Amino acid sequence: MTSKKRTFGALSTIVSLAGALLLIMSYSVSANPAPGEVMLIKSLFFSALGSLVIGILLGVIGIVTGERGFLKFTGLLIVFLMVAGFIAAFLSMTFIGFGEP
Image 1 (cartoon, rainbow, N blue to C red):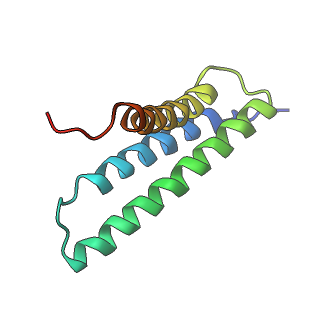
Image 2: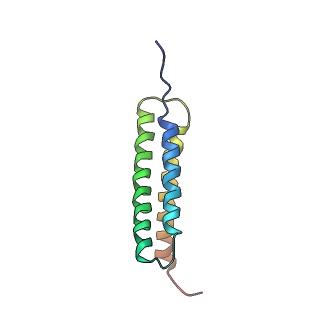
Image 3: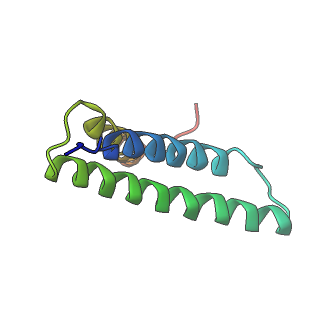
């Protein structure tokens, strides 16, 4: 029998990176968006969230199926680092405040 090569880890990493890039693009479209740009921002943002969730699911499937290699963890690590960054930004704004320089 031939063994199939599982690619859940590689797909998880690629989809997580795409989600991170889409999220960055959604925040960098415009500071004062026009009505047409608002729809673009929404589509990029929700596509990013969907990509990040799919990246997590693919990483978990790779772990559960016993896939070899480290790529199954990198997709999860990308999402974890993004969430940790957002939490750190929120906590720093909460405790340090929004004071003027």
